[in-house]
Image (tube, rainbow, N blue to C red; front, side, top):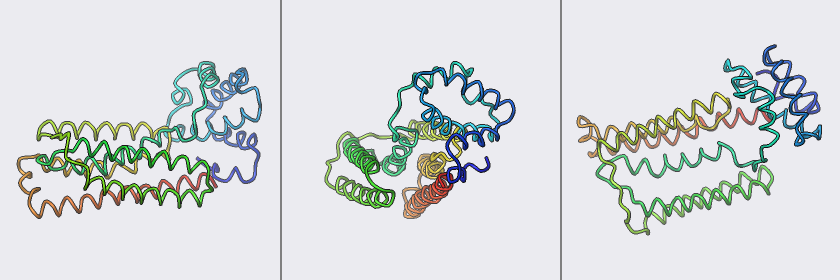
Length: 279
């Protein structure tokens, strides 16, 4: 996809849309033109400026799909008239209500729940997890609220304060919440559950990345599989004994550090790609 990042600085939205349309294949152009015609018949897009803004949101996504060898018909999954009617009747979602919202939830699972489930002899503390997840939800809600009311620089500072506060609150909870609601992941059942979760998240990541090249989901894959591998090693008969020794504890510590680092490194790369697209 060429030229998307620089269009906003020099063209109106309608002009940007015309230039982006030129990057579509002839087949996709024909589908796109039919879709635009059908959208103009929808009352939701009676205002031309609103229609152009909507088209500006759709075209980059379609170009990403095209770069992944998807046709417009495959990307939208229906004929232009049906797609236009669906877009015309769809209620506008809050800007924060996207697939991106699921990423921090998975990171919470990777950073809090899975590390505690590595050793099968150590149970998960249901009450503690519930308290920590409640703190996480409060922090996310506060962060979203601040992001809608602060300038970009203030958002970074605000999120930093929230993350530090969340880590401190969860640390205090881990030392004060009584052990209750203990959950044991057995060797066999736990292994299956961990593998199913890892495969499901990987499949979701593949699906979402095909639709959005700058998806955040790939940032979690390294951490997901490193943590899953450590948990499986603690459950396999040939390696389970090693994982409860000092060497095993060292391996778990190194793996945890690498898992966290992979999120930061890959996430930083995705953030740069997203920043480049908005320039």
